[in-house]
Length: 216
Length: 297
Image (tube, rainbow over all chains, first blue to last red; front, side, top):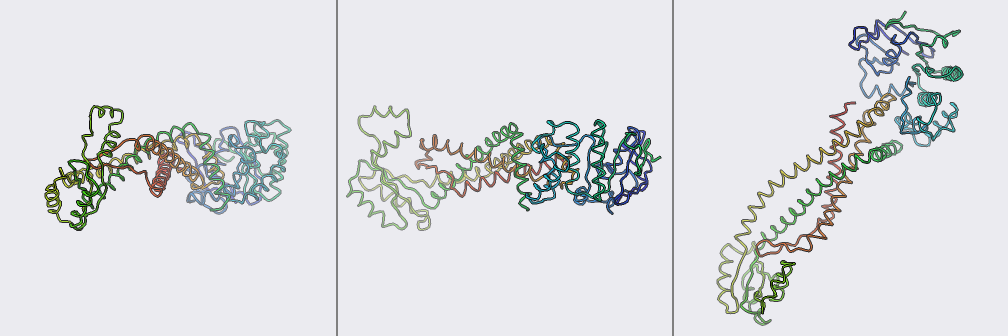
C-alpha cells in the first residue's frame, strides 16, 4: 500500500528532515510511527499524502509514484487517504456537519447520500448532537473527533493520524485509540504518528521509530 | 456538472461574498462607476451613430418662411417639392412651435424671451432628401428654386456640417475604442484585486480543501462564480444609475447638433442584456486572472 525507497527530505537547513527512509506498509496494517519531537514523523506523513515531495528517492502510495503524479491524479489519490492533522485543520466558518461533508462534496456525492453518510459518521463518533456547532465552540477532544470523522466519512484506504491524542487527557486518548482500532478492523490501513510512549506500551502493533530523520 | 457540486459552488460563492461583504461592496461600487462611465459613453455613442446614420441616408433641409404660412401656401410648396425625386416632408414647425422649442432649450433663462413683443422666430418646414435618389447638385438647385418663392425667406441644409460630424465621429470611434479598452482594463483590475483579497482571506481554507482531495477546478469555480456575480451586480448598479441619469437629466434637456435636435433614446433591451453579459464576462475573466496570477494552487 505504501512504499518508500531511499527517501530524503531537506528543507534547506543543515539537518535534513528525512534521511534514507525505506519503509513498506502492507494493506490493512496498523503502524505506529514514533520518535522524539523533530524526528521527522510529520514530514514522513506529509510525504505519504503528498503535502511535501521527497528531495530524492521514491514514494509509492496505492501503486502511484508520487514524484510523477499529476495534479488531478493527486486529488483523486488524496480522496482515498484520510488525514487527521495534528492541528485538526477544521474550517472555522463551517459547522461540524459541513466540515465532515466536505470530503463527500468534493467527490460530488448526491446531497441525500452526503446527509446520510455524515449523520452516520457523526453518530459513530458520538457527535450527532454537535452537528450544528462551529469548531471554535467545541472542546479539543470534540474537534479531534470531528477531524477523525472528516477523515473516515469516505471509507478511505489509508488513514494517517498525526499526534491524534497530542492534547487529550488519558480518558479521551483511550477513546480515540479505540476508534482508530475500530476503523482499522473495518479494513483501513492506519498509520499513527505519536511521540507518546504511553500509547505504545503493551501494543502488539508494528512500531517504526524515527530519530533525527532516520529509521532506527 | 452534478447537481450537488453546482449547489456547493453557488453556496460557496454566496458565502464568500457575504463573508467578504465590505471588500465586495467597495469592489462593486468602484466597478459600477467604471461601468457607468462606459455605459454612458455607449449610450451617447449609439445615439450619435444612429443619428449620423439617419442624417447620412437623408439630408435635412429647413425652409424658413417670412411669415406664418397658411395651409394653402404649405400645400403649394409641398406640390413644388414633390416634383423632385426622393423628397419627404419631415414636419412643419410653426412660429409657436419654434418659440416653445427655444424656451425649452433656454430652460431657466426662458424669461429673456418675454422682452419680445412679438415672436421673432420664423416658421419652417423640415424636409428630407434621400441620398439614394438625389445627386450632389440637387440640394443647391432646390435651394435656389425655393428661395424664389415669395413666402420663403431662406433655405438651409445640413450637408456640410454632416460631413464635419462624420469626420468627428470617426475620431470619436477611435477615442471610444481606446477609452473602452481602458475602462475594460480598469474593471478587470478592480475585479482581480477584489478576488485576490478574498483568496488571501481564504488561503488556509484552500489549503485544507486541496489536502482533502479537492481538484484545482473545485477550488477555483466558486471564485469564478464570485467574480461573475460581482461583474453582474456592478453592471446592474451602473445600468440603474444610468437610467436614473437618463430620466432625471437627459430627457429634460434639449440636445441639438447644428440645427437638428438629437433625441437621446435609452439603450434597447438587447443592448442592455449584451452589456450585462459583458460585465459578467469581465468579472469572470478578472477572477480567472487573479486565480492564475496570484494563487498558483
